[in-house]
Length: 181
Image 1 (cartoon, rainbow, N blue to C red):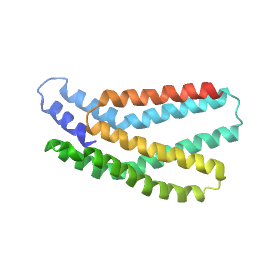
Image 2 (tube, rainbow, N blue to C red; image 1 turned 90 degrees about the horizontal axis):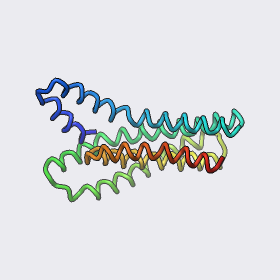
Image 3 (cartoon, rainbow, N blue to C red; image 1 turned 180 degrees about the vertical axis):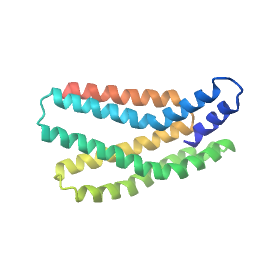
Image 4 (tube, rainbow, N blue to C red; image 1 turned 30 degrees about the vertical axis):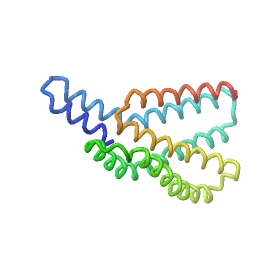
């Protein structure tokens, strides 16, 4: 999030009539974007399960697993992204880009270890069965790694890449649902 901060500050300092509303819109999109796209994926999954005549209890379980995975991954990633984004923004500002890839892999390993352990404990006590537990844990780990990668893309100011990746996620979810339907 700190990477976009520089762009937003630049927009705010401009003397154009539209610079402050544009800065606010960019900040809102980057902040709310993951939530909105996550909700769109949930709606798509709910519609696909409803269309394929999945039993209501199973449909609710699938949506609950995805919802908890999304929320937990965003919470755990949000706590670490404060430190990671600040560190990377300082490195980018000082034009010392040699540590970016090392920081990326280190943060991925850290998040997977700590987050996977915390969510694994949660899943153990959820009582949803071993098969669903493994699938829920794998989904959580995938989401956690994806959010961290998106943080790096945000810091590196690849906003079109962010939009494309979120859009691709929605299309992939619908396509895979159609294939497995």
